[in-house]
Image (cartoon, rainbow over all chains, first blue to last red; front, top):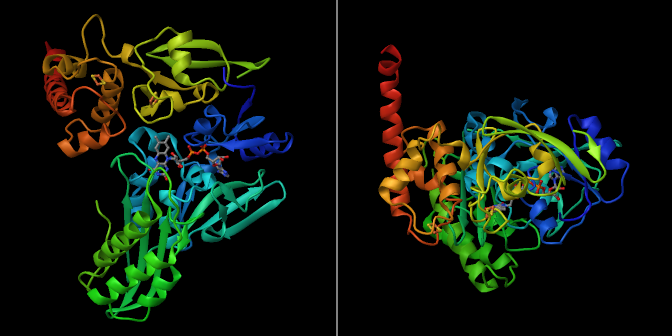
Length: 294
Length: 172
Ligand SMILES: Cc1cc2nc3c(=O)[nH]c(=O)nc-3n(C[C@H](O)[C@H](O)[C@H](O)COP(=O)(O)OP(=O)(O)OC[C@H]3O[C@@H](n4cnc5c(N)ncnc54)[C@H](O)[C@@H]3O)c2cc1C
Ligand code: FES
Ligand code: FES
């Protein structure tokens, strides 16, 4: 027996909100692949867990008005294998497929990856590069937040404890958009990223009209490499431009030393992975080329 | 699910049999299976989702039973390694592991076999790459993996053969 934490399995949004609001220090839980480990390690001691993984409102994947809307409790394996996500938000599908092991992806959810707010969260970088927003609900009402504005630091978001992410809203990829996700970790199949990079470039007539570059595990939160984006935006891709943008990205991130790698190693990885991802999306300037490694 | 003190009563189907158990909702499913139901075939290595020794099939999917809270297992259907052999006959995946010698100490084996079963249930003829991906959440400290991959490939053939023979057997 670990500790006296109450457990409530919510079957509807109402049940979830009632259970979270009438108890201090209560916490939502979805797959538990982050939170249950943290509880076991004594890092968190919620008074009550409110399980939301069977709340029907959180379980669908739909196309709605130009966006792919992914329910927060959808397991990562379902996000990765969804034809809707693969077709309209391929960057997100690719990143989710690179999280953990099949067992972890079968339990872990996309809402949990965001709620855990790890700077290394793989779906997060891909979602930020895709311009995703999250739908957040509580008894007080509903709001939509730009995902990249949701993180305050490791494990910290702008959400209050009684606010539930109900869905992730990802703009449908355009015909002229190319994307790539690169992750480096020690144990290929299932390890937290030492660095991950997600890139989305809009290319019109061989010119980069917009660029979004998101970096994970190199700052207290996932970040955009805004300087590198500026370097490439409005220009025609060439190997020297890619080299320059990758160097700028490595310069503007602010990694730390930890068990997975040193700051300087991470900076080097940002350079390598950004360059690799940019090279993938820029090769062949005609047609739809997904840079995704499949 | 009714609450009794800090314990709750959950109901789950394990290897086809329904169990009603009083559990601490935060004890891991692996403990419920091993300590309460005495199904000790499921092993626990790390307790953190990293080694896969505790893999069971929950509602048709491979999961780390050490990461499933007992409270969340209420109403679920579980298959453990004990559920594979039937009427004293090993499951083809078990047969293939024995034939190939795909184990040494055997600690990882139940988890490996459950991951392999989840794979073959959804994809009866996987490529080597697909086998490797499906087993990527299972660590083995002894074998070096080659024979495990071979065993899954052989199991896939054995199962294919059995399935192809089924109509013949049914007709006779
Ligand atoms: C072995 C192993 C390997 C892993 N590998 C990776 C990896 O490669 N990449 C990676 O990014 N992660 C990895 N993870 C971490 C984890 O699996 C993911 O972050 C997963 O997406 C978490 O989802 P969950 O549903 O299990 O979250 P939970 O543990 O249920 O919740 C995590 C946090 O989010 C909150 N939360 C959950 N749902 C909601 C919601 N709807 N609204 C608001 N808050 C919510 C919870 O309160 C909690 O604080 C790994 C974990 C393990 C155990
Ligand atoms: S014991 Fe569950 S994954 Fe190691
Ligand atoms: S046989 Fe010993 S761990 Fe795999």
